[in-house]
Amino acid sequence: MADGKVTETHYNHHDPVVAQDPYATFADVRGKCPLGHSDQLGGFYFPTTFEGVKRIFSDYQHFSSAEGAGLPDQVIRLLPVDLDPPSHTRWRRVLNRFFTAEAADADRPRVQQIVDELIDAFVGRGHADLVSELTRPLLAMTTLPILGCPIEDRKMLSDKLLWMVHNRTRDNDGWIARYMEMGEYLTSLVAKRRVSAPKDDLLQCLVEQEFDGRKLSDQEGYQVLMLTLFGALDSTASAMSGALFHLAQNPEDRRRLAADEVPWAGAIEEFLRVTSPIQALRRTVVRAAEVDGAVLEVGDIVLALNGAGNRDPAKFAEPDKCLIDRDAREHLSFGSGAHVCIGRHYARVMIEACLRSMLTRIPDFEVEAGFTPEYTPSEARALTGLPVVFPPERAR
Amino acid sequence: MVGIVYVEHCGARHEVDVAPGSSLMEGARKHGIEAIEGECGGACACATCHIHVPPEWRTLTGEPGEFELAMLECANDVDERSRLGCQIKVTAAMEGMTVAIAASQR
Image 1: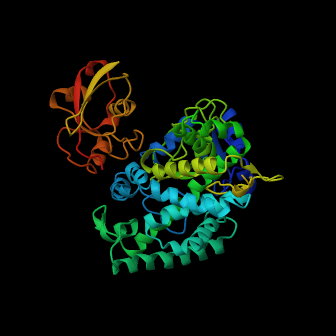
Image 2: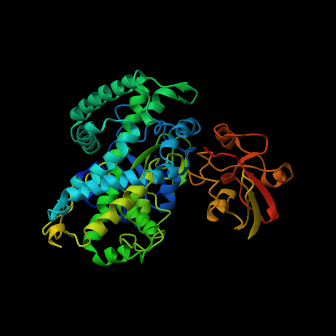
């Protein structure tokens, strides 16, 4: 129980209504006592200032991941996100090499080829759903080979993970059933690799390398792959979809970016800030600590809300506006601290290839008339669709 | 500002000015010294800002605490000079300090 002033709410990141605009709640709480408390999901606290959110991510000595990073709990422990340093660090150092800035940079030609093929499929048609036809398949086609998951399973994995991420509190039985299916699929994938020809991918690393001094079981391999798939099939697509939604509505920003009047690197950080694809990660208080004006006690559950930190006007002026020439580099969309997103370098490469290619090949796309954006609830917030229209390529 | 010299394992020297109160990791990142990664942003949580502080400067930098020692166990090329750059706040007395960047942060 927090000692001090908190703002009471019914905030629940799994609520589909809340997911349409969580920022109004964050702003309301921030304007009162900036530490929010919710009576939902068993009760939890949430800071709403940039510094407060960043502290939760950074300070593992007070805010531990060892009780799980999801609220409510996942069916299994996800590795290594449910570990604290230094054990987490030893895991992370083995996994990092697949996701370094150099690795992502060297992979640009492959990412570009995927983007080109996806755009080829709809550029002559004059309309497309950029979520199902571009951003989600681009992300999956880029990441699955890195992980070592068969590309022919892309649709099954993408559909299943999308369902699991967004329906956890709406259909518990369905959620557990899908976990069982994924467990069977992924443990079998790990077991098969142990007796197959080696490849240079994450799956090989999971069967060959030692993590914190020992080799992994098939079950632990599944626990890593499950986490990686959650990250690899949804979040970056959300950033790209949100960026494309902005660009579809703002021709002047399309023009400025296409003409290199605004640096791409900076604009990408602003798209990441505004979209905040990951919205909420849970920590458990293991030492009492003051955050946003109140003291959290041992055992309290606290949610670090990436989007709340990213919309703090004390850090980012006019935070609800997407200003592509602002300096948004300190945003919290990749989290911060020990668990900072391992895929962040790849995310930037994918976002750039996707947006640049769209502006080059389809410079004048617009959102289809009558479109109302719908966002998924849960830890991950994403546009469910983005129908656009444009002059077909042949007509130009 | 405080003049700090960062020497990379390959021998490259970076003589830069670091704001007092910021960390040695932040000072390096601000000047684009890529050999210090600082992946976790300064939370003593990734061991990618590993530096070697010569004995003559250790009175000023102090000794690693419990959590830093645990993190250093995850780093490469650790010896008695090892520190994490994120855990050393720069003070005016450090003017002219030279630190060596560990061979690899990964």
